[in-house]
Image (cartoon, rainbow, N blue to C red; front, side, top):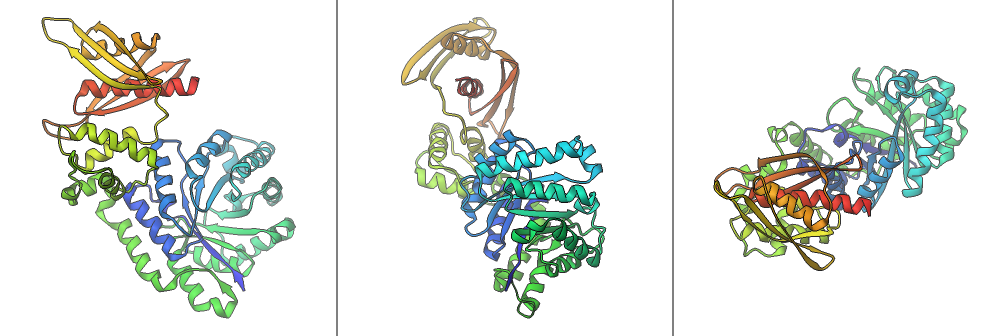
Length: 464
């Protein structure tokens, strides 16, 4: 029996979905028995890292495949977010046609060949499963494409995928294309070989079926859109013709129609135009009105219901911040998500805010007395300034004994009403590099101090 698997790219292109909806779709694809679930190129942003970690926690059987930026630092950052997945795959999508190498990669063919080997080796040193995708392979020079594939194989790629991004090949042409590549790169016969075809001319399904006949092991599919062959169509083909053709896929056909219908409903619904916490706050607010009497277990469950799956350390940090906020007011879903955004996945804090006392008015000069904890010891600073926030920042500087250039400072309301939570953004510049910090509090001065410390701790952590 020939094993042919499906690697689904639905989430790679469904960028308008909310956090929670992406996790829901990933879990449905996992239940279907999809071989791999693909996510877009990792941006390096904290929210993307949190999404990858949350999906990884919910996916039990499928490979979680994340596309990497085309540089070594980007590969390392992607792996840092992905490494806890039960089955992980790093993917490198490299243009191989002359046009795309020039205008996307801005590199000449010999440089691209060197880059392929270098980046695949880097990815392989971190993750045992590495996929090389030859982007726009159907319009590439055959000789160069063969060299690129061989370079990827020599560097340790475990899966090679060729892509017809233009979707211009007929089924017969794609079958012949696969056959020529197998002749030109003999080592392809000894490893997993994948294909992807854009469906802009409604030929992706036919090309996928032809490619299977030519010996391809993995097909890129999608539940909706033209990015690849249709998961529904390909899976039905496996179901009706698999035994006759000696093909097995590992798909769970009994839940296929229901799961696909659920995913399409998520993709089509108006809910996808809003964020995850807006959906919950508007539709299920009562469930997420938490008070200071709620336990850490209840708060963690509420965080999971929002779509997040955090580490024990991050859950503890979220609960600590929740307790500070909940003393003054109940915490809704929207506010809980703001807490997660400001406290989860932060660097280890060198400086922790213990207390602050602010004296300010229209007839006195603003004064700030701030106490921080540094390496288990309490340190304090007292300063005056042009307003309470200026005084607070100067007090922190007096404690750390250093002045950092304040590049930007912003304040905005996170929620509505007289007890609204405020969010502060502070950007500090050190050594020519910017460090951003975020703070959340019902007291905007407190939010500003926390944002300053958040940025400061990043500087201290990175500069040692």
